Length: 119
Image (cartoon, rainbow, N blue to C red):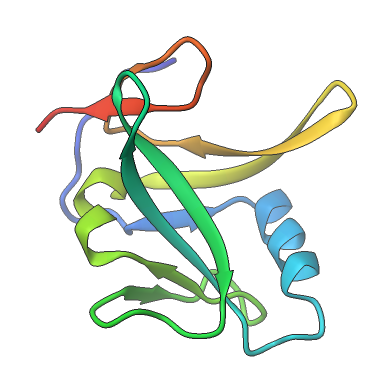
């Protein structure tokens, strides 16, 4: 894990090419679907990431277009927590998983379910 500083001008969220391909497959022929990213209070350290495939964004969502095939809606209350986050899709053994490389995280729980940020 590397140390990085908060950049208030950073794009809210970006995706690696591998993540883009994964979400392009997930959206598939339903081109009107959006990927929505939010957070919720969870676990022993504070927050958990929530990814949903939705028909429409919520009011005040930050809308990003990481590719011409994927639209990402970020919940407005999560933008500060997620600013500068890179979404990746990696293979770990026989499993593939979405990973969040979030420079704002200061601690994670042992199971990887939750994380905390500087408030």
